[in-house]
Image (cartoon, rainbow, N blue to C red; front, top):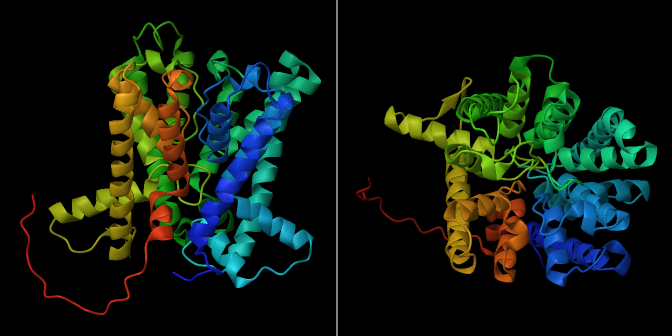
Length: 439
């Protein structure tokens, strides 16, 4: 790993995140940022949740925080979603400052890219695309919320939710998230389109924009598009069938309402965090499915979290190849490198260990909640999703600290933290191969 000064790019990225969260916490604790009482820990939790685009909230965003506090949260969401270094690129260019190699390495790490080539162009295209999409979404959402709240509040509502949705944050200004709009086609389509576009990955969107045919698409893009489609369709069908007669969720709705609610709740766990159904009222098997979807997460170089769809697909393909006694993993007439298999396994295993460790602590500190509620909250924090079964505000101080750590690691990625402290093995010594019994 090449160093930038005395710190490696992963270490610098972590430092920038910590500084931004600290500034956000201080701003949220200003007297005019909130109404009533707000502890330092709750302000810190909110700043971390916003910066990591998670959406878990220990206090109600719409009633506890003032307009100023909500704007601070919205800015943290935008910074965390698009990446601090993306904004740094824009500032450098506006000031006419040259972006050196060390800055490119940090931007590469921030955007989760394999190389520094073309990284500046990617950051610029990302920012332009994000702002255009968010502006267009504001105009569409305003057609619903301006008539409901008036011009000023309606536009502000539209802007806040557009930023939150595109960055897969899940923060809302209503205590029940979007449950009041379960039957509204425009809200369902616009909000879900925002977090699907934000969660599929910027490199995928740019590849789709520039490619003229399916054959020109990269393997990563093909995996993400197909994987996202399959996961969303399977999840929607399962929730629709499983919750169809549940009197607390889909049961009382008409068919169109059932379909909209099933669709939205199927795509939202992919790190979006909005809900149109009461999560705590879902059947246990539906909750288990959502936990799995939250753990898988969105795409690489996206605003979402989780282990990522490509990681899940590569591990799945590696398993299939092993059972078929094949040494190579082939997909779309391409062979996946063995290095990617090792990386995927490392991401999945380190993520499982992180969630398991957090669960072991939380089962002691949060004994007042069921194990399923604790698992749901923990995986939601790791996947930077923000969905909750309603226990976030009642967590103990120790529980909040644990989830803060989980959200932070979930956003930056376990491997980023590992690379920030690990030293490269430059040893050229090789040992003889041997067999070990496994399975």
